[in-house]
Length: 139
Image (cartoon, rainbow, N blue to C red; front, side, top):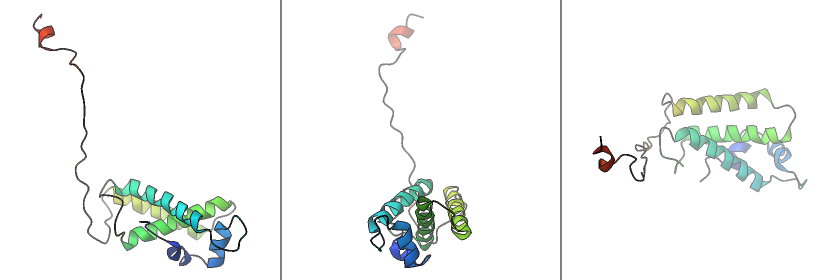
């Protein structure tokens, strides 16, 4: 499940601006596939931060995570067009990344209780010991 959607982006910019950012084929409409792809990339980035504190992906993303996803997705959509990016969009992107870093460090908590990630387990397989009892008996 995506952390944000087209309606979240439409609350940040007009539909006409969203069309301008995504309509590579000149059809006069939002490219849903492109928006979905960008949101998936951003959500992967978000998960890479959240995994330090909780299990991901989040089944029911809190408002903060939806907002961060939309801010990051909008910035990426603007980046693909090149040219000048509005200062407000740059600031929202920077702020979103800072918030994610704080969440990863445990200094910022999401507004809904979520399951903490369990302890990480590492499985190690070893081959034949370099020094077994037969080698050590010689010394």
